[in-house]
Amino acid sequence: MWKTTEGSTGRLVQLCFAYFFFYVIFGVATKCFTGKAASPEFLMNDMEFLVWSTLGGSLICLLVVFAAGWYKTKTDRFMQAGPLRLPVEYAYIIPSGICTAVVIPTTTLMYMFLKSVMVAMVIMRASVIVISRLVDEAQIRQGILRKTVYREENIAVVFAIAAACTQIFLAKSEDFDFIHNAAALSVLSAYILAYAFRIYIMNYYKNTRPKGAPLDNKWFFSIEQIAASVTMVLAASVLYFGGWEARPVQLFHDAIAQPHAKWFPATLAGAVYGMVAFFSVFIFMFKGRTATFAGLVNRLTSLVAGTTATLVSFFVFGGRFPSKADWSSLGLILAAVAFLSIAERKRIAELAVETASAKPA
Image: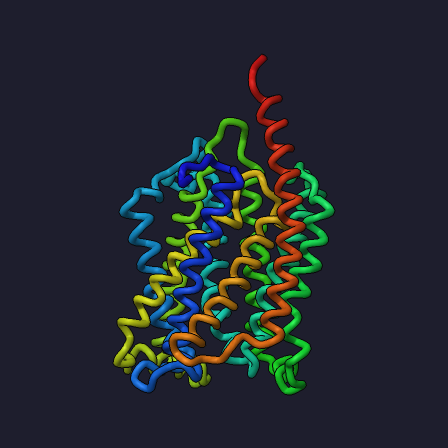
């Protein structure tokens, strides 16, 4: 049952299960270090957890890509950059890695700036769903994507956005004070723009492979993560030694200069999140699917995992029980999944026809 082929529904289900599994573990771990469920000796502020979990996530990604040799060149197209002969794809994979380096810290900063964690999650998840649909539209108009976005995928987008936005109905007016906060709006803009460019680039790579050229998502992931890690190290060095007095920068400096007693367990929790990153990227870039479909599968899986993590936290650590909004979101998610299932059956039939027509007579 574990042997599946590239681009098959079975392979997609496996990726979703792995993404869900590690996301739940990380979600529960996060509650152990932050929030009301955290025990006093493990309790960290958001910036401390960001620093050490990011370190753990980056290290596990780099360890895998170097140990497994995924970073080795997987292309037959090169360009000359001075004395260096580099793969053509570096011209956009490295910028994708820089965008990843922006997405990682801005995600946590969103939680710091917004009073409501629920509102922050709504904005981030809904924005990725919308971005994925817009990327498809842009690449169809550019002639890059030669697939149709099925009606069922568009309907699933509506249900998914509704699922993400259900929490807003319970939000208080002060939860939206960030719209008057220039720093918060800057972080939000950086998050959305970085994710938009990243999703566009991932799908550009997927949709522009020359006939017969390898589509190696592991290689893409490797170069992207190396670029992201280098970017984050450079940015962290500037922030640490820059001497700025802004509160987030001071919290960042203190998290490193005066490490929390439980920094190592937080780093291990980050390593779990690093595993999430693998499967997240592989779902976003899944062969033969539109950005709309892949983005929906990615975000819906995270929504279900988030609710599951809340349940586990409730039963194990006495955290909060999922709210009515959580359960309502889950119902809307299941409706979105139903429409995605229909779209998946159509896509599999379409790919079968394409494969058959590509075979020599």
